[in-house]
Amino acid sequence: MSSEQGRKTYRSVDEIRKRMADFCVYRDRSEREVRRKLAEFQLRPEVEDEIVAFLIQHQFLDELRFARSYARGKFYHNRWGKRKIIQGLRRHRLTDYYIRKALEEIPDEDYAATIRRLIERKNQSLGSEPLHGKRRKITAYLQSKGYDYDEFKNILDEIFQTS
Image 1: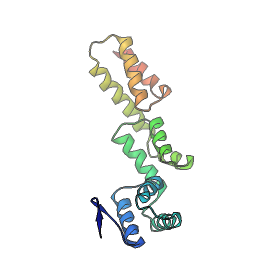
Image 2 (image 1 turned 120 degrees about the vertical axis):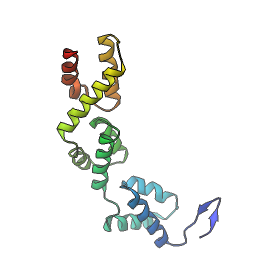
Image 3 (image 1 turned 180 degrees about the vertical axis):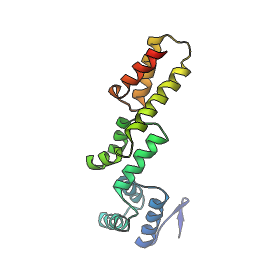
Image 4 (image 1 turned 30 degrees about the vertical axis):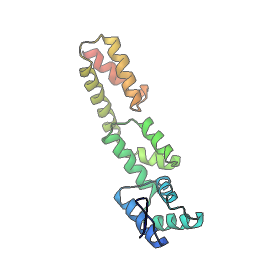
């Protein structure tokens, strides 16, 4: 392998195919991510398509697996709401079918419990601020995390009635 400005150049399609398989093994990828990475190699479109087909055929690339993994990760680690997860999946150009399947990975009980936890933590962090100010800030916070008002309104009402 030669190097131009610190970059590896690959001599064969087999080497690129192996590199892309490794890229997909590291973590689940969308086809869009794979094609973006393949663009770095400046391949002919038919060669790029052949590599993508190989990755799909050998299960290195699976959009449904990616969608599910993405939804779980963004919800459980980043505490994103469904709206923000959907936006992220659409940026990866996934179909509505894959998006629906991905959202099935988030149980309703976990979703409600996460909303409750986020509200309680944000409420505590706001300290002795007036009630209406807290509600407004918590609402803005949850919406920025991708939660719809209808999803958290009842929990917010319940918490503020007891405080």
